[in-house]
Image (cartoon, rainbow, N blue to C red; front, side, top):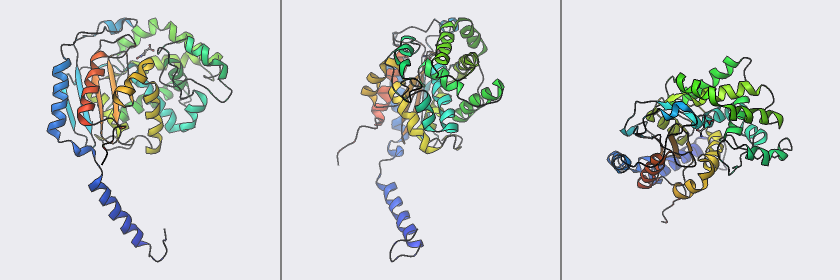
Length: 349
Ligand code: GLN
């Protein structure tokens, strides 16, 4: 780079000085003292521990068996530090939160346009396993303006079908590999959940068949539905989920392992679909309340991302009518509020 009247080093020096200034002036993730972050986490845990609203999902029989009192909170900041309360060890099935990471894989491999062109990035406004939504938007599939998104079942099964591989095993290795990279450790499938959902997932099979019929899935919808079911059964604890959220909060770099697992320029698109559809038909309410891109799963987990500040996850199985964990929504909203997590909120100077 050459600027009039300067040698090549000078602009570099000026840039370095400007960067140093920005680091001093910009409100950073470290703006909160560690003790304050822990205090916010502890306060939310104490406040919602005894909240008894909601009910475990039971349309997948194994999920009804999970202890409804399970409650774990984890927040991870840029330095990889974990602030936690409650149960950090017990694993639940990741369920729909996996949709984010399979979409991440597709976006990483095929680019942001792939998802936008083959599935769409618009909210359906319908329940996560809506068949009506597939019917309503099908008229535009193939016309260059698909109106689905990869965070509801129809779009997620389609996204799973877009992961490239010569064999089913090869596709699966990529899907679980991406989840492992984001979580920072090797995850495994909870076999009882996988079996339970495989035995009862006729509705998702119907969705998969429809997505093939309408051109969103190009081939082998049965494989896509099975791998989707398997990815939903991956076992995660609150720390795993918070690490995954934090990796998205810090430009695709896992702050715990230090590994870059997704290109930074691909992350904003993924966060945008989380903001649009992460909590299904309640995504608007959630965004209005918190401003945070987030994703829920019927296993009781929710992840949320405050870009550049923190990743947060809460596990608590009882769900509201939209299929989102009741305690997780409350705890995340409180903690984010205490930490200034809403990216739309700017203090006038
Ligand atoms: N595996 C679940 C399903 O397809 C995931 C749903 C969810 O978490 N919302 O029904």
